[in-house]
Image (cartoon, rainbow, N blue to C red; front, top):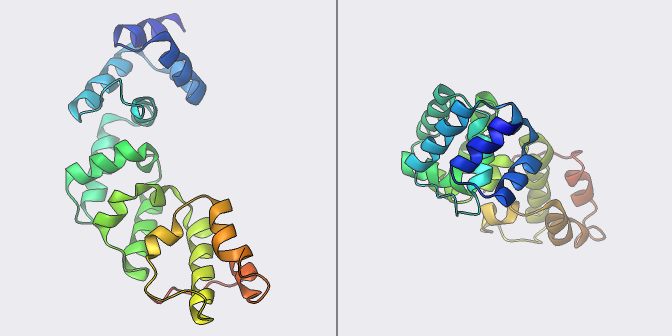
Length: 200
């Protein structure tokens, strides 16, 4: 433990920051000092400052990847037509986007692009959507919105990405509980019993 803590201190983290890092990623204690220094250098290269409130989360994510894997993740997102700069900004906002399996991320992005007709630049500006489970979160929410559109409860030109974002309590209150009495199908949709593609 001591070599890890000492390395983190030498790299510029305060004791308070080190304590927080160990809370969010206890596995950090298994990292080698060389890897820690390497990750600090990599984050510095992409413009992440230690003083940034997101630094520890980016550090945690980067520590879980090998250098070659990090490069592959960047190329995966770029393959959808966005710049490296856009991917890096998305990573800084939502570091976990690089921790999902490639095939899972491809499936999620393809659904957002092909089925929901969202733009990749918009997705990169709201990368939290990429952290949502496609089967357990995005598809049920789409089903709810589809039912509400069919019943005329919401407009078809609703800003779809904004509607899908937010915690489960917010979405449930806004779109499910609000309409549960007069449109019972929204409850079934939210529970996964009704899965329809969203015509948008």
